[in-house]
Amino acid sequence: FGRLCELKDCSSLTGRVIEQRIPYRGTRYPEVNRRIERLINKPGLDTFPDYGDVLRAVEKAATRHSLGLPRQQLQLLAQDAFRDVGVRLQERRHLDLIYNFGCHLTDDYRPGVDPALSDPTLARRLRENRTLAMNRLDEVISKYAMMQDKTE
Image 1 (tube, rainbow, N blue to C red):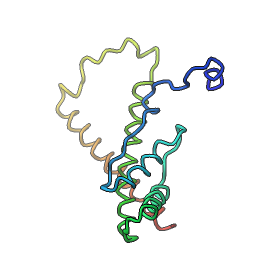
Image 2 (spheres, rainbow, N blue to C red):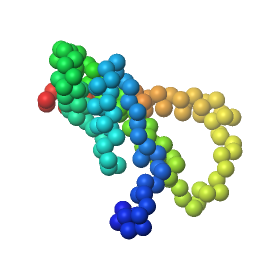
Image 3 (cartoon, rainbow, N blue to C red):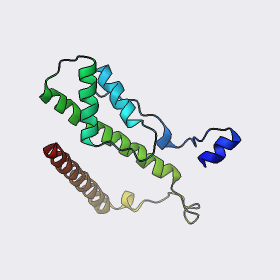
């Protein structure tokens, strides 16, 4: 596709959500924000930075701009940024999936009657399952972030 666009002298961008830049303003240091923004907006669809990448970006920005932050504060800054970046990239991928996922069998589907609206037991159960799923996802993310932190 890229070669075809090159031959036709047109842009290869399709306008998908996943191609949009994510502005990052998660820390109070604009130098660190710029470095993290550059990291998360790297070309390529499969660039999901790990904690080490974010920590290196924070450390590089801190040394280059002489921020004078202690190692522990850099690590806390990187952990917060890693969580924030993960949530934002996950949201972007989820939106991309919603906008681009389709099937001819569901083209005629019209969201009408939601069974959870008429059944309070079902609605409660769905809310409980969502809360449980989010808690378990947070546990898994924390577990692997700690494992990765220990290896470095």
